[in-house]
Amino acid sequence: MKRQRAVITVFFSLMSVVFLGAASACVEAVRVSGARAHLANVVSLGNWTVFSEYENELLDKFSLFAVDGSYGGGDLAITTLESKLEGSIEENIRPADGISAKLPSLTMDPFKSDLNTASAVEYALLTDRQGEYFYQQAVEYMSKTAWSNAVGKLTDMYRDATELEQAQKDYSENESSSQSAMADLNTQVQKAAADQAAAAKQNSGKSSGKGKSKGKGKSKGKGKGKSSGKGGSKKKKTPENPVTRINKLRKKDQLTLVCGKKKVSSLKISRKGLLSKRRKNSGTLRLDTPHSGATADLLFREYLVDHFPCFSDKKGSKVLEYQLEYLLGGKSSDKANLKAAVRKLLLMREGANYVSLLKNTKANLEVQEMATLILGWTGNAALVQVLKHAIILAWAYGESLFDVRMMLKGGRVPVFKTAAQWKVPLSKLITIDQYLSKADKAAKKASTGLLYKDYMRLLLAGESSKKLRKRALDLIELNMRQLSGRSAFRCDCCVVGIRVRADFTIRPAFASAVRGLLGVGMDQMTASVEGGFAY
Picture 1: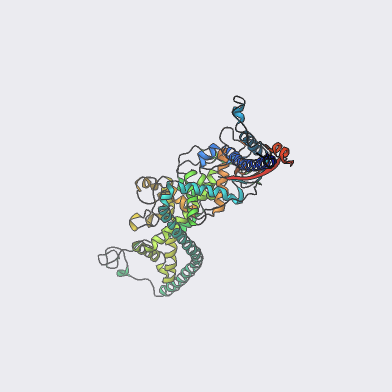
Picture 2: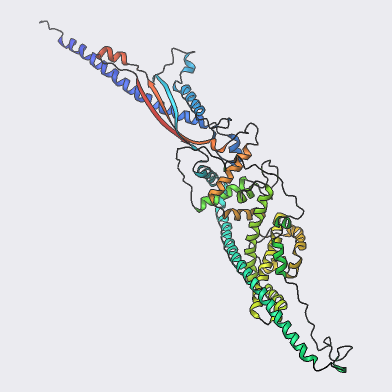
């Protein structure tokens, strides 16, 4: 048998070096790819860790998620947030470290990665974009709760607000024109009175030349000349003009009229340092804003009613007791805010009552009779109609005072009234300030209509969303500062979103095998991972 040389064995031995080197390079590439995926997960976990430290009291009281970016210090401390992010990444980048000391032979780190830096590239605050992110969270909360099932009912209620707004506009226009007409009416009445006096004087001069009448012409006794006989008619007494009385009443303190003896809160806040008055921190990250439109605005206003107390609620706040009223008025004291709310309620009720009066045939006849008794002597039907309209406006105002007083006592008031639901008789307008005391008892019997808080809903519907956001954030900040350990709380330090970047070093694992087999060096590599989180 002829002996052969082992050429193939040597060839495969040489090729195995190449194969092993290439295999080591492939394994290293797969490991690096796995390391990058691992680092992305670690950064995501770091974001979740940082944002899991949300402000519990803010969530509990106002249903809002946010991290206090000042960490109790009163100033935005993004570096502290970055430190917490780095700590979380360091802890999770090598998950086997916790057990490797106890079981060194059973654990290994396949990714061999180290963190270089982790920083917040961009962040978003609760107050950014004029409170847009606060608005989005509030609407999201309301849409996920039972209120979403009541949208139809709320829509009907806010439709009433639109009708009331139109009625109020009509009333204001008519009241303004009536004031002008009444000024002209007074001039014409004075002229008519002067003309009558001159005519009476002239007639008196003519009759004095004919001498005095004798005998039977006297009205004394039971003669036929007496007007009180069976065939005569009793002349009605001229009533006092209620418009004059109501105009004087309009200049009085309306809050005293509608509150009566009910105690009004004396709490005040300092406008200095209010969120809406100071220069705020601002972020650069723009988040998605999925909620907008009429339904979102409706839910946002319902959020405000749900989270802030008003005059009719139980008291106990150390900031302001009438916080819904602050949203409407923006004043620094409870009394001033309640006064502003009462003024708006009166205007709303005046419009509704004016419309109701115009539809009330019986009431119109009463007003026509009164106007005729007061100015019928002028013989000018146009003046009578001017006075009639002025009396209707005055009557609507008097009824509105009664309505608001009933609301403040816990009573219900219909949006638009029928004749049976009317409370103030025309004859009581002259003494309406005394008659208002009857509203206290009437409030207990009123079972139909809307409560004070319902009317606050309607008033909020007329305010701009931006103004309400700004004032609501004022109240959130002030209320949070009353809690223990949160005296320096600031809404413009509340982080609601972040975009981070982390730089890593990936150390080689199979580089020595590749270098030894192929003579090609594989040094350590760097990786940059970006991630983000938002509530």
